[in-house]
Length: 371
Ligand SMILES: [Zn+2]
Ligand SMILES: [Zn+2]
Image 1 (cartoon, rainbow, N blue to C red):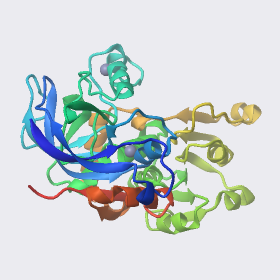
Image 2 (image 1 turned 180 degrees about the horizontal axis):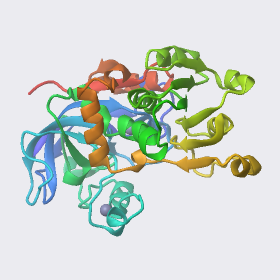
Image 3 (image 1 turned 45 degrees about the vertical axis):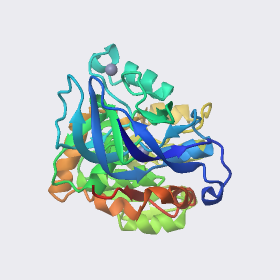
């Protein structure tokens, strides 16, 4: 048992701005020792992601209170009984859906989310079903099995992937969510081949990561499409060779071998489908509100031999994908550092959420002080 400072989401429908309504408060919590298969991690850095923001706005409903945050990097300080994936002293990055490796989904031939991980995440628990944070003795939920906005966390070893110490903690924090999701959409679901033309619709953290992965894999051209003109300017600095608003893209009739949609609404996916060339692939990555439907030109789908595919968590094996991304970071081909637009303290999360909400930030990193 130890005491840690952590960012607790107290309400899931707070009005904007969050700097005023303050739905996230930093509290001192009790953190239990790791149980069987669990790991104690001293957090070094955690990214502020749209999936955190959507918990504040109620776009993705969640029970409260919970300790927010799901993309983070840290050092293993202790391991519970039976842990074999990581060891004390390892640098690890968290993934937002545990992968038990033993259920029928994890061992099946097709890509599926871990059955046990889905149940645990929906319950706000760790893979074991347990909660390790308490406030005045009352358990508090975990966010995506991680809860990265805390000085120390306990999580399942199946929520962690070991990364080289040479990968800086800021960059390491982004490997388990933005890079896994955006990079995997390009490399796994999109099967990008060297020299192909790529368009990215929606240049938030995941979209920018997709653009950086496309650059690293040798795309012939990378076109950023976003209604936010300021983001288009940023995208030009992230390897985009062209940058267009959705209206400009439609007016030009521009079409691409691979189009990756990272917004999560019907208009953006329609833009992505319209911008996909004959024989090309459209990859949907953005998470729309439940019930969202999109009209697709069925004749064009057939006669143009198009592919429309969804991608979640990179559509691959997180261990292999994160190892590949880490190697690309270290050899200089994947410039994830360029995603980072600022650093904040744990206490400044509401202000950071407002900046993300207004589209003024790509990835802000919560840095935790050295012990
Ligand atoms: Zn995320
Ligand atoms: Zn599983």
